[in-house]
Length: 128
Image (cartoon, rainbow, N blue to C red; front, side, top):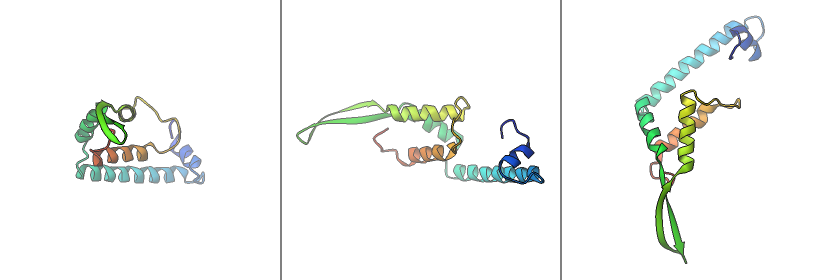
């Protein structure tokens, strides 16, 4: 919709020219209500902005343990930076802050929510 009138956006979305503006307004309003409801659900589950900010900060410093073995016996382990986790967190935080824009027309929110849910539900993964 960027740079378009509501009528133009409605037509582009496939609504007939007559009534396209009203249809666009109805769809946008429904999306806003659904978005607010989803935010309430997340917050009710403890996923507040403060919690997510703290979790993102932790993930920016994520470590992982790598193991060495010889003949099937573990001989050494070492903590190293979990660079992929740190990179994904950096990218997500910068997208949320508006510093990075998605270039594809795909839905960024689904991938973002999957990453947040994985980060919250999997504190013992090898990427931390």
